[in-house]
Structure formats: C-alpha cells, structure tokens
Length: 73
Image 1 (spheres, rainbow, N blue to C red):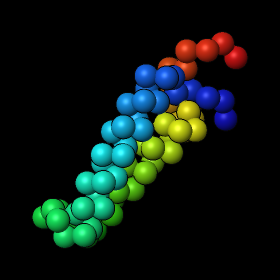
Image 2 (image 1 turned 120 degrees about the vertical axis):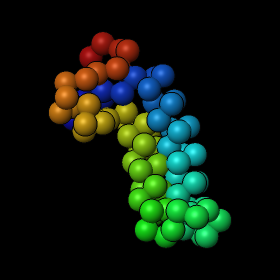
Image 3 (image 1 turned 45 degrees about the vertical axis):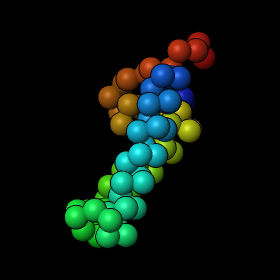
Image 4 (image 1 turned 180 degrees about the vertical axis):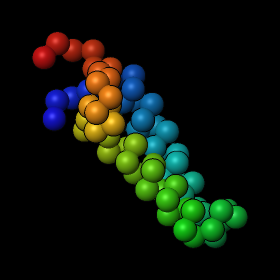
C-alpha cells in the first residue's frame, strides 16, 4: 500500500492518538469512569491513530481514495 497520509495529517494523528491512548489507559486503570472495556477500546483507537500516523498509511483512506500525502510518487 502506498503512503496516503500527509505531514499535517500525520502530526495530528500522532498527537491526538497519543492523547487518546493515554486517556484509554487511564480509564482501564480506574482513573476515569468510562470502565475497563470502554477504556480498552479508547486505547486501541489511540494506538491505531499513532500507527497510521507513523507509517503514513491508512487503509480507510485507501478504500475511500483519499490521499493527503504532499509528495509526488
């Protein structure tokens, strides 16, 4: 799969993903009232955002034909 996540999109995904993952871990640890199952889902969403940001590849973007990558291939 080709890269389809641009630099601004990448930065936002990594930053937001890290925050979401931390919130999910906090929920699993009992620091937030969301509960363990919801916290695990929230943490997983954060991890997916970080991974798609660092690899610059998003399967949802690929399926939808979206490309925010700012370089020519």
